[in-house]
Length: 340
Ligand SMILES: *Cc1c(COP(=O)(O)O)cnc(C)c1O
Image (cartoon, rainbow, N blue to C red; front, side):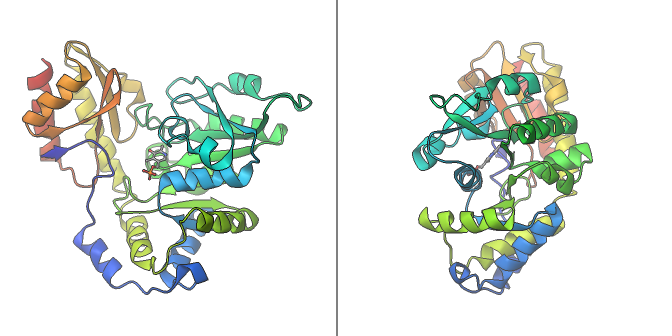
């Protein structure tokens, strides 16, 4: 089976497993797990943030960020197709008592004027208080499109001018950085909080991280425990993340090249709609015009190719560490067989 459903399906390599096996561990709730402390320090340096916290998942990273930046009754501005709005089980309201105010973007990019419009007037006590502007980079539902640095800068400035916080959901910030050439530290410099995932393109089995100031991470440390996210000898997982950071970032360019090959093959099929300008990283989202989304997924599966639904009208193919050039070639011929 060629599995293009997600970049989360990768399995840890032998070398990564060796790093996990050999990891020094301690009780991380006592902050005595040396490998986790090393991971947090390594990432704080990499992103040039004061502090960071290893967490179990990207959802936990995002939701901890929203929690430490808000009070119940507050509001977050995010893009309509954002992960925090669509794929986090409504936990912003359930865990933090806040609501999300989605702004429609183009390829995940919010127009700063629309965001300015969505900010609640400060003197309106009967409205929610806007507290955070959140941006997702790269943008999952926008086919992995990279948010231009000018837009990030404009939205970050808008947040500052209005005394709001700026959060980046950087689950795939590595992909954005490799595609754009903008450093991780530059992206992070615009954000008060940034969450990143090791379990997507980087190929670690588990783990995400939240970065911010010392003071905010201290707050997040307490809330992580209260949400059941305090982990003990977690160095075995931090070792996988450290291995991934040191070995698997630059190779993301290969995943991007392979996603483009798949997208170009899809663009040549007349019954397929695909926005080639959005194919900038490792995700190719397309709309089949003859068959239903489910029919495409089922038919491809019969031929040995796994895909997932991007929405009710679109199909998603994602390249990753465990996909080779020959598998991409085979995937293309299966797509042609099914879609033509
Ligand atoms: C995957 C993802 C997350 C986090 O998901 P988890 O499954 O909780 O790790 C957050 N944001 C985006 C954009 C994602 O793609």
